[in-house]
Image (cartoon, rainbow, N blue to C red):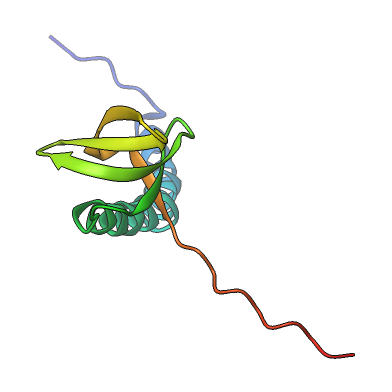
Length: 108
């Protein structure tokens, strides 16, 4: 039994090789421009969350501003206004609010 021969089989193999290189280049760009910076930001955020202390002012991912009142394992209790408390997951903290020192007034 004779198998059919395809005259363009060699061209198909070289075409596959020529399309593989752009796919690898897109993958490399993705790793360097998206994955690595995101990984660094996530590590910095985890360090920030681990270092939270009572009295720190934070912003949640939902945009709620509050002062940390208490830590209960993986949960934080925030005081969002005097006497009003909110319990959130520790991972939902987006940023710590740091007050900038007031600049001295410029003399004219």
